[in-house]
Image 1 (cartoon, one colour):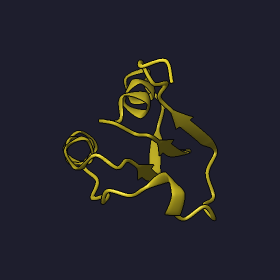
Image 2 (cartoon, rainbow, N blue to C red):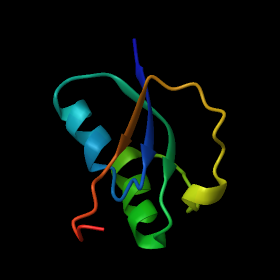
Image 3 (cartoon, helix red, strand yellow):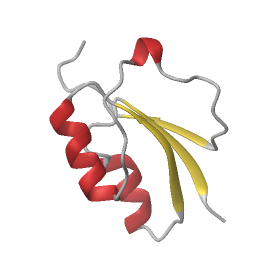
Length: 76
């Protein structure tokens, strides 16, 4: 059984990659990331084909088991 994941502020997908390295079966439903270089790296690491998208206008009607996001290191 796969865990259906939504990654917000996905970056390179470190959160879902960590779950994969723990041996969990994950299926990434969507990755929301505005940085074109980050999403390009995300796609290369996870063998996906997501496009850049802004958090204010992504498809919010998704069937997921887990929503993940990375915390900003800037403190804001």
